[in-house]
Length: 217
Length: 262
Image (cartoon, rainbow over all chains, first blue to last red; front, side):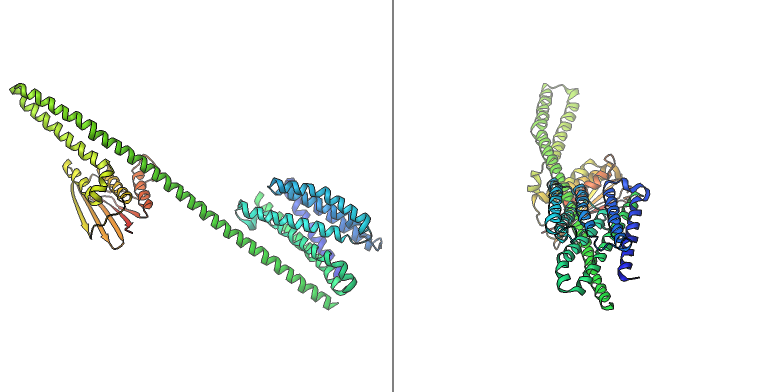
């Protein structure tokens, strides 16, 4: 078993645990958990298909899947922030950013980085926007002071996970193309780092959903 | 290959450490802000409470002043008129009624005197003239005149004047404490000690009454004597002082008020 296979396995295990947490005792009935559940399922489907295509079908390029997944990912996370943020102006801005981003992503996939290439530009734009939403949410938590015990607040952990995952995504995707051309060993390290950021996201989701389960009990 | 894994592991560790630092920093910053916010709320509550007490005191003082003026200017005049009328009856020269008339005149005169004393204790302008110790002495003299209490006042140290507001509030505290003694204690002896020591003024009001259980008094119940005790504490707090109440069954009660002089 290669190191990449182990990392893939870890990713899938965490995905299943996170999905299991969302489904525990009908927790998916809560709106934001439902969005996270859909996000996790889309992640599972994309990663599963990508792995199947490479390992079973021996397809050499599965990047087209991520041209579909990225816009979907941005939409779901934007819907999540639209739901949890309280400032109307920011919510409106996020809501408007979704169709604009979808248009840009499609435009990039058709004209700039075709579906056989890595969609780095679309990923960088999505990451930047999501980082801003996450920071705005932290600001809102800090200013409102409505949360009594922050480390037991589900959305705090979810937000931490999203923030770190997309900071990682921004750095990795931003440098990946350059590193492939100029420093292949470092590019390999960066590709593995993507797993670490995935783990952070999934761990944070599991922690957050677990806090929600404790809160419900 | 192993070098790749090592670099990945180091990078992952760095990322995780950054994440950990971020979480710890955010949690601490949030906690700090939470504590500051709670302190601010408490400060606002205290300020609000203080303003309410000041407003209550101002209303009370104004009411007392109005009543005092009414007693002095109106009721005393009516009673003086009554004396004149009674004397006019005396001039008619009905011998059997003369004794009763003289007694009546004496009673009305006594009423006028009592009312003037009462009027004096009510009007806060008098405290400016007589000072705190003068007004406390006067208050005790009034109690002595009822014949129900023996009183004593001890003044230690050199008398220093406080601001009018502070002296008035202290005087009202003494009045409240004496009121409790009259109403609830069944005491025979009352002693007040006024100590001017260094930068602190201490007023001790002690009685030999039946006492009470200080733990058992409910300060929230407006019908109980607890309201009086709460008022004493609140007023002392208002002028930057403290009020301690010591009492036990059959051992009397001591109210100690400490106020900074400067």
